[in-house]
Length: 287
Image (cartoon, rainbow, N blue to C red; front, side):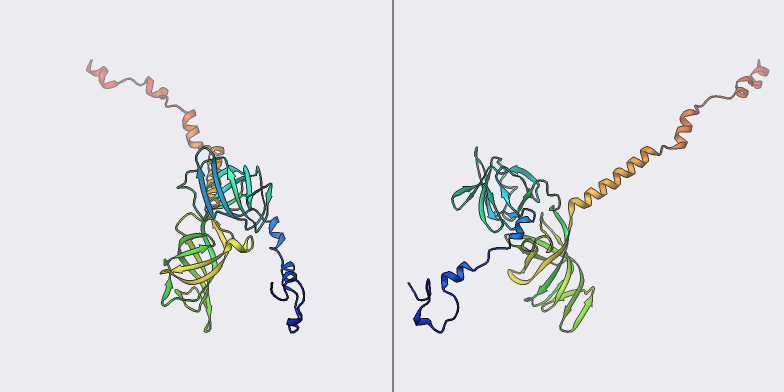
C-alpha cells in the first residue's frame, strides 16, 4: 500500500492535508433535501419479459421510490405499480435520490412505446406532463454560422435526446452588448430562446429540478451549446384550459335559452278568425 493512505507518512511531511481514507470520509453525499422533491426517475435501460413483467433501471434524480408505490411513465402516461426494487443485487423497500436501482412491475408494456429517456413520477403528480414548448437560456460555444428561427437541433437532457425547433429569440448578450428580439444567434452569444420539441418530451424547469433542466445542444454531430430550462408550457394544461372554457361556454348556453325559439314554440301557426269567415267571392259568382 502507498504512503498517507490510512495514516500520516513521514515520507510526505510536505503534505499537510488529511489521509486518503479521511478525505473520502469527509466527502458529502448528494443534497438530502432532494429527497423531499417530487419523484423523477429517467429510464436508463428497460426490458420486458413475457409472463413476468417489465424491468426498468435508472438513477433517481429527485424524490424517493417505494415498493408498492403507484407511478406513471411520462410523457406517455402509462400507469403501473412498483412490485420490487433491486439495488446492488439486493432487494430494498425504499430508494432515495442518487441511487441507481432496477424496479420491477408486473405490467407488460409494448416495447415500442417505452424507450430510454422517459421519466417515472408519482401517479398523483400532475405538474410533470408532456411539454409543448419551453423557454431556456442557452450559450453558443461552437458554431461556424448563424442559428436562425425554425432551425432544428438536437437537445440532450441527460439520457433523453429530442429534436427541437427554435421558434423565437427573446434576447441575447455578448461582448458588444445586449440585443432584444434578435434575428439570429451565433458563437459567443448567451441568449434567451423559445423552443418547441418535435417529439414527445417531459422535462422540468431549473427551479423544480436542476438535473432535468440542464441540456446540451447538438448540431451536425457536434456540440454547439448548452443551457438550462427556465419555464415550461405543458401540452395537457393548454388542452385542459381550453376544454374548461368550452365547458363553461356550453353551460352558459344551456342556462340561457333562446327566447325567440321559445316564443316560436309557444305560438303555433293558427289561422286567423277573419280568414276563416271570408268566403271566396269569385267562386260564388261563378256558381
